[in-house]
Amino acid sequence: MSETAKLIFRGKEYEFPVITGTEGEVAIDIAKLRAQTGAITLDDAYVNTGSTQSNITFLDGENGILLYRGYPIEQLAEHSTFLEVAFLLIYGYLPKQEEFEQFRHHITYHTMIHEDLKRLYDGFPKDSHPMATLSSMICTLSGYYVDSSDPLNARHREISIHRLLAKTPTIAAYSYKKSIGQPFIYPQNKLNYVQNFMNMMFSVPAEEYILDPIVEKALDLLLILHADHEQNCSTSTVRLVGSSRANLFAAISSGVNALWGPLHGGANQAVIEMLQHIHNEGGNAAKFIAMAKDKNSTFRLMGFGHRVYKNFDPRARIIKKAADDVLKKMGIKDPLLEIAMKLEEAALSDSYFIERKLYPNVDFYSGIIYRAIGIPTNMFTVMFALGRMPGWIAQWKEMIENPSMKIGRPRQIYMGAPRRDYIPVEKR
Ligand code: CMC
Image 1 (spheres, rainbow, N blue to C red):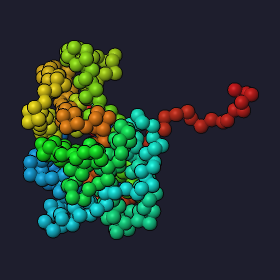
Image 2: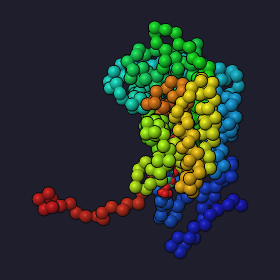
Image 3: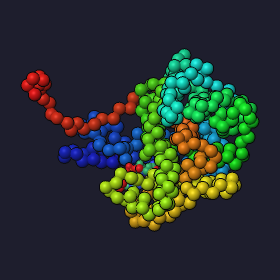
Image 4: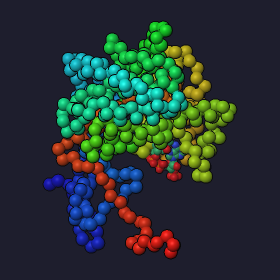
């Protein structure tokens, strides 16, 4: 007999099915709760709420485990490439050579953007944040592909997925080129995904650009580590918007906006700004630790803490090692890395952080690598978005291909004024 959970409410007993996941996670399925009891659940910030069953990513926050389609992140980081991981996340399995070549071909041959779209960049002020440009441009793509944007049409889904994955690096690099007043560099089909992005970012027509293989490998690694993270804020946004059957570009541009916030993907930019600030103030980590603990201050140690990871973030472990390696190999001595390590050491031995299980997250060290490989600080969150793209796409695809998909629509408990009558302005 399958397991159930009992609820006693207002003297009556109700029974609800228990769902057990592949890795032993349990959930009480309350789909019939309101119909049977008249009550809803209230779960501020969805701390205990599972919004879906998913086959894509498994995350065990207590034990620091992250699996994409069952494969440990550590193995993918060591042996795979970002594009292969993208395939894995989107289609659910590791591709055979031929399948992968075909996928790579599609992604390579959709990298150019419509020439008219380039003119839109002129409407953005020079110092516009590239996340604003990125989300606007991605949404604008839906205007260019009106005839193939039906989320319920499998062929439309496929071509939209290819276009989005392929064009995002071009859109992102152009926003950087616009901000520094350099000409846009067209994509080059002979280059791989990372090489092409870096070429569009840093080459100029006047001279040849040579990409350091250390940089290429580091960036590919960062993209893999960011590729999916189950039902986080931006992914839930993509699913929620997509559940209304808005097209893929509209749903993903909403995800980009959600990612932008400093409590989510925007933390990578905020971490470097914080480290720079600590450095400018003389490198006194203790002062900032004290500020982060002070309840009268709104300051938080950026890059610390996670809603789900309560022991360590496996991505942060890999990134910390990679940051060290990349800096050594490139012969860079970054004072911000030293401050980051000092800060981490101080925080990890402080009871405030220990009791609250606050550890460095994925964003704590990623910025050090981005800096080392020449990515400007305001582009860090864009890099996160580039990495997260396959995850958003995979989650959207899984949702839209589920025949029992419904529009997402949370409920609420109204706590405002009781019913009252309108008072004309002269009588108020
Ligand atoms: N510095 C100082 N105190 C913190 C921090 C921090 N970074 N994070 C959490 N706390 C405290 C918080 O004040 C609270 O204390 P108390 O129980 O005394 O009120 C306790 O720890 C629990 O925090 P919370 O805000 O209830 O936890 P949450 O799960 O809602 O928030 C978080 C998770 C990631 C938003 C939060 O830890 C945070 O703001 N971190 C800094 C921003 C950051 O690095 N974000 C990137 C997250 S990883 C990548 C991604 O998701 O994109």
